[in-house]
Image (cartoon, rainbow, N blue to C red; front, side):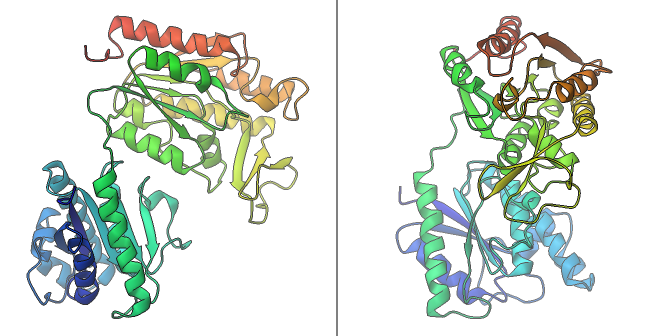
Length: 413
């Protein structure tokens, strides 16, 4: 447990004292350090294991090219490209167990790329003067990145910034020692959902899939959860996906910042992963609850889910737009796709007597969803609600058929 190696990323020409202190805080309890210098103009005061020349070369460039760019932003993007590629290659070679980066806005910009290059599950920490700032767009954040504000650390060491740096050193080393990497042998079914008050299928599906020898990872579809889901799908990390809450797609096309990005509902298909899809809670768009209601929604009913999230109820045309977005995304799939359509409703609150019950809105959505279905998508209509037992049973029927035919690879042994 005392021999974990941490990749330490930073500009060793300008922040050697701070990076040296961080290194000491990692090595003092027994950890090891692999330094990566992403500086451009200056030379570090001492040798760094991965030099700035190594970093630039990994990205297909040179330090001279970065210097001659004459633009700090361009130069650091060269180093970000090289640092990301180098970090991923070295992790695959087993050269380090976790990473930590240190920087102001420039170093943070680069570090975000390096962190995103590493798979989910690799401990990744960012000590930044702009941690948790609105300057950091959600789409730049690795799904499992940890951030610590570099308080008082803009220039030089002091007691305030030592507190931040020492915490960060302990956090990344502790994470590298404690992390339980995902097992390589057990196939994983990726599933999306919201809390069980809205969507309940996972209660029946998780034990049923586990009984078949599969692990089930359920992702909270509130933006960052969808990003993690899509990231793992892009890496081929799932044997099959049951993507039954695609609300983030509606969030994205209707301009909400509670978004998993424009590639939502595409990465599993691009990787050839079999997909069983249902548009759970399609009728709502989540927005940030503590900000003013955007001008786009003046006449729409809203519900404050809590102090963080407010849900906007879509009108008929907006629901149809969500349906067509599902078609566009799923049409790109290279693997099999079954679209389950529980025609009695897609969320607990749209049942008869509940506040979101809207037969006309549901009919508008179904009409658009069941029209012009892409040729690669198998549409299966179900006379049930998404939270009925019949929905989970139908999903298992598709899964079991694929498993029997080898479309979904069976667990080893």
